Length: 252
Ligand code: 1GP
Image 1 (cartoon, rainbow, N blue to C red):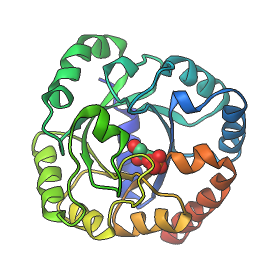
Image 2 (tube, rainbow, N blue to C red; image 1 turned 90 degrees about the vertical axis):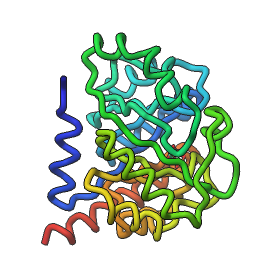
Image 3 (cartoon, rainbow, N blue to C red; image 1 turned 30 degrees about the horizontal axis):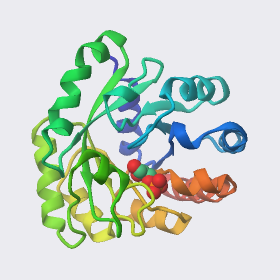
Image 4 (cartoon, helix red, strand yellow; image 1 turned 180 degrees about the vertical axis):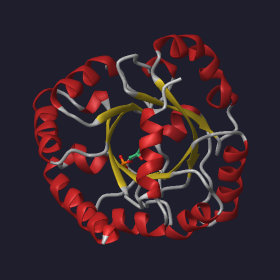
């Protein structure tokens, strides 16, 4: 089983090097819009480009092909369901929606896609996906028929993340949902970080470099930005420069 991308995440984490992923939803990346996003990402390549969405009509395949032609960043699938799998991706976050209690997103979709995923040879990273209330009903909550953890219940988030680690998952994705009004609270990130060994991804509703830095300071190893860059690609340099400055400071 391939392990290159996960190993790379572990090495960067060991070096205290924070990482950025840009999330692109195939449905939102059409025509001229994708051209301006790609041109920004060429100048400021993120560590990863995540591809997927809670509800997509267009295929992940064609977007991945375009991205691979244009960018050097690794392409990681962040699928809303099994239909979004593509053997063209460099890796797959095999998500279990641990904050929810819907068996379809805990094991059902996985059974449907397991044989195809293994045959593809795509690197698989088992990921504990933990949804936290973000101030409004998120698309993932509606589509997966799962519920978010209340913002003030950090102990539930910790228990859920630890359960994921005990089950053998290799990444935790703590998430307020795409387009959240409020990102995951810093105290919750800190509490989860404190109780977990594996790398921690944080995303949802992060729309300023300051909010990204707050997530890093609280313990995120990798931050995911979707909406903010999809609607305003011109923001990408500000985030990239803030991250670069932070990593350079840490290396001194
Ligand atoms: C969603 O965490 C990602 O799953 C990114 O969220 O689109 O709000 O940045 P945003």
